[in-house]
Length: 573
Image (tube, rainbow, N blue to C red; front, side, top):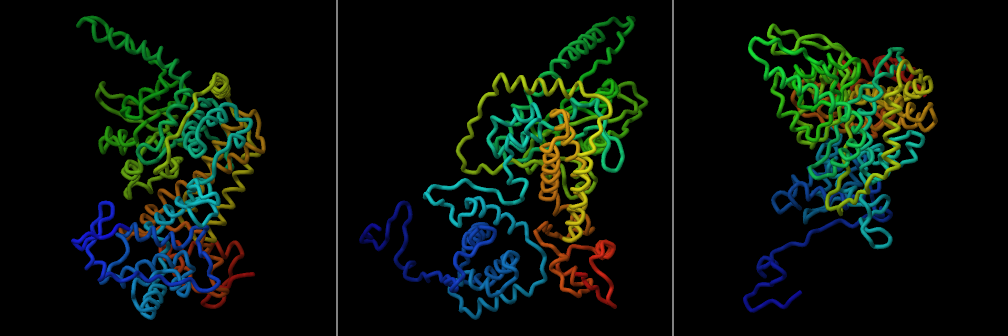
């Protein structure tokens, strides 16, 4: 450091530090790791890094006068990733000059608090800490000393990189992601699938429950501003080319009809409505115009692509937006919707809603559209939520132009989907998705996870429909097709649970008290003692209502996992 000038101040860069202040500073005391502790970590993330990020998120390291309460808050939160072990926590957290006995009392008091699951803040801290590390390395620096690539550990499917070989045989889909950066391939794929389903609007399939359905799909691609969501639009423009060419002629005829009607004389007969088929409609379309387009669709499916979810929300008033929610829910199941007005100015009628869309948006817009008052209305479970990768401080992505051969493959895929009609039997897909949804039922039951149990059902439907699109493009139900259907079901389920889980739990509880959703890898059934009471389950999952608890115990009993032993339950081995 530079030699202090005569004024008694040390100048370093732009900082000026008084010698008197330096003299009164106390060194920050950090406990040394116990012998054998080594570089302790949670899922490959060093605890030291997690604690460092925690201070960054909570206003910096505690000052004298707030050390007790700040360390207590840290201990309450970090215990969720330390097995609630006070000895481990005491070895991990810094003391900041407090006596060791006082810190130990703080930690023991924190560990006695009723478990409430991992808080949203702690999940964000873990996410940020994991992004600062590379894979299994305990340091952001790899063996070579160079900065490693951040890895998002928030879930299995969202951290999985989509490789072109995972789409082997699905003409058009594979070519669509080949030029896309690896971490952006899932969002691009999820934006394409609803359009692919709209092109295959002549197809009908039978689901695991025996009901027939069409390929209705809805996608929201969420991410911060400037996160690269436009990559989805570039690929979609290629897929939309045929639909836009068909619509261009129809829109020209409709515009001519409007001009002719506008320019006619007062006593002249109005020209008849050409009732043109227009399939690519803006997401901001009014309910009346949407009804008109659906009436003139001749059995075809409409499609919308929106570049800003917030624009959709702003351009719909409260009443219209509520109606749009109803329409979107019905679109997923191809249900009936209509309206009746006395005025000739508004469209009236009853139609089957065949309407797919893909919309890009920020997390803020997503929260406004799926708030606490409407996330339980059923739309959240019908939407594919695909999250853009975190590109904070990342260098600019370089995109390759689509080649002529790739364009030709996408064009062939569109022709193939448009020519596919009638009932298509997919027994292998039905069996695969049937097994998947049963596996998730048992997993949710063991975890007593109400959110997973809620979202697994329609996630299976979405995965099945994505698998059907794959089979249409591949020509048959290949092993790759079956793996793709399972992968999409997993991806959809984890995305919905991650984005909507906490809000849905608040709805389930039926009050405004915040309840942190913890999808956790916490298996409630396995953590219970051999003999337990109802309150033992509620201790592990305090957000469960008494009614839901009775249902869970009933399912466990029916599965042969537990039996009644007087006033207590006993686990079967």
